[in-house]
Image (tube, rainbow, N blue to C red):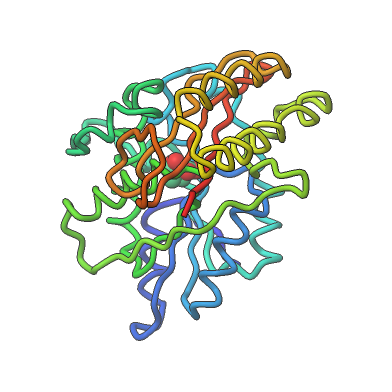
Length: 282
Ligand code: PAF
């Protein structure tokens, strides 16, 4: 694996990639885990030249403390990517991605921008679009790999891809969440949990699964929601931003079971760390 830090070097490496070879891109903020590696492995199975980026994007953090405390392990990450046969790692610094006086566009995201993650993290999705758009313009991949743990982020990027013109058509590949054996969704933020926190964190997924079963059996969502929010607070979670059920396609709340594909989404705090998870109900 080669590692480049500057756009000039990135362009040189990209120019040397065989023109007939597809390019697959896995954007990350580092602190890599098996979820990221699964994205890379699927990209490799696709036979593509694989590029990962590691860039902790300041514009998507609405909480400066969260940005500063975001885990950073560049050397460990690079070794892991190398072991998993990533072809190229791009680790730009902030000035490379956001040069002084550069014009940062605003993205039309409709109501996706103000719901759930958008409501609790104002400006977050504009920041995500800014960095992903910039990286896509630099790399010009054929495939973009994202994890479904960030389900709303996948919808936001899908919308941005529809509204933005790139030099190539970019296919978004959404990959299922990877979990620990106890069910906890892998996340870089899990690294900040204590052993006790980890023994509680997986109960979020247990609650989501149990809520899904109750919903499938016909219980109303408002009853389910009230019960599980209370239960999570009793178990030891500090705060619940949302524990909700949405139509998975048009991304609007639903309250009674119907034949549409739905999704339970939750965002909670544990030991001051914000965790999100979801489960699609077919
Ligand atoms: O999901 C993430 O890790 C980030 O939001 C992304 C897509 C790498 C953009 O910074």
